[in-house]
Amino acid sequence: MGHSHSHGHSHTGASGANRRLWPMVLGALIISSFFVVELVVALLVNSLALLADAGHMLTDVVALLMGLGALLLARHGAADGGKAGVKTFGWHRAEVMTAVVNAALLFGVAGYVLYEAIQRIGTDPDTPGLPLVIVAIIGLAANLVVMLLLRGDAQESIAVRGAYMEVLADAVGSVGVLIAGIVTLTTGWRYADLTVAVLVALWVVPRAGRLALDALRILVQQAPAHIDVAGLRDQLTALDVVDEVHDLHVWTLTTGMDVATVHVTSRADNATVLVAAQRVLDAHGLHHATIQVDTPEMRDQCHEELTW
Image (cartoon, rainbow, N blue to C red):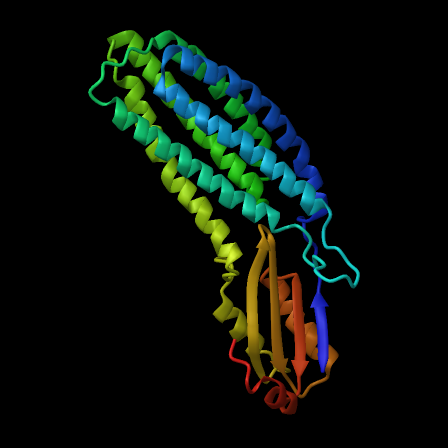
């Protein structure tokens, strides 16, 4: 029986977590400072659009703090030793859990804004336009700075991506508040604030859903969307030294960390089989892969009752 692990180069893990920490820290400080300003102004002028944007700001703060926590945990990597309950994959899944919570917070804020908007229909809201314009400009500037800080790591970390998406939603919200303020100043239409609040909430919902689905795909250990599992199986089977491929499993630990296990049946030398199979897996980005080589006799003995 042959057994091997393929370990290619990866930019995730402790080194990646270290690199992402400072942008997250700076982003959290900027967003937290502006959240206080926006919340106070929203309450003073009774603006639902500002309140909605402040709610999104709050989810940004929570997202950034949770993302920081997830990255700090990921720095520890996998624990080793023989203790019961040892975390052989470390804390990398903390990033995925953070994304789920972020999506839930976005849904909650959007739901509250829509509810509050319905409650205000038929009233005669009086929200001054100038405070909306001033706060929106400051908020948009803050969001853009934080987006620039996070953009580089948003595709490599689902925790950073969750925070980035919330900041992006806030940037759109700030643009909406700015438009509402300008419309209120120039036309005197009192429902501009309410309309923008609803539009921002509706804009956020599908993006929160996409983030949640991405995270749930990882949590249920579904095969990564960018990997053709059937094609991978065919390529492994097509190897001259491989007779059969079975028990092929591919899943994602966290963003950028795809994992695979596979059993191959072969009569050839184990080392030759392992090298050939590793090349195929590496070509698919599966650098952390476990390959087991079985003889035809062992295949029948060890797996005749295995159904998954």
